[in-house]
Structure formats: C-alpha cells, structure tokens
Image (cartoon, rainbow, N blue to C red; front, side, top):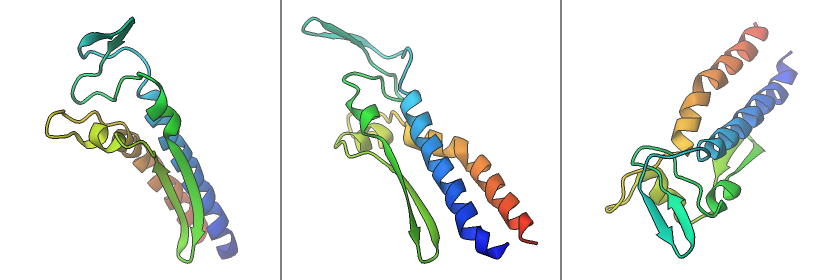
Length: 125
C-alpha cells in the first residue's frame, strides 16, 4: 500500500493542477461588466475590478499551463503563465485593480485536493 502512495498523490496533484488551469481559463470567458471601448474597428468589453480578465486577444488564456514533476519529497504541481501582464491582472497595479483568475481557481480546488489526499492517507491505515 505505501508503495502506491507516490503514484496516488501524483495523480491527485496532476488532476488538481489541470483543473486549476481549466477553471482559470474558463473564468475569462463570458460577459464582463467593465467598460466598453473601441480600438480601431474592434470593440472590447473589459472586466470590472475583481472580475477575471476579459478575453481580448486570447493570449493570456492560451498561455496558462500546468506541470507536475516528481521531487524527492513527492509530486510538485505548478500552474503558470508566461505573459508579462498576468501578474498585474492577478494582483493589480498602482493604476488598475486586480482581476484575479488563478487564485480563485486554486481556492475552489483546495478543498477537493485536500479531501483526495485525506482519502489516500486513510487508505494507508
């Protein structure tokens, strides 16, 4: 049973990181309640402070990825984006309020993740 622990926890970490990635991307879809503005012939409906960012080019949503790697102390899952402006959207800037998309997804998955780990722990008893 104990030999299955790393495999089981890796599966939980992988599923959790994939769900956080998916929820983060999905949160950007749909209507937003921020201001409406034009850039050339294109009209954009921005997100309001506190809402996930509105999709403009799709670059941010397409850049969100998840990875799982095995470390000496167990699996490590990471959900990330490589866009420069993601941090400003997630946490806000001096001139713009936050439009979080990663933390709400992680917060939503936290109880599910912890419950899955607890089940693995109980199966080892």
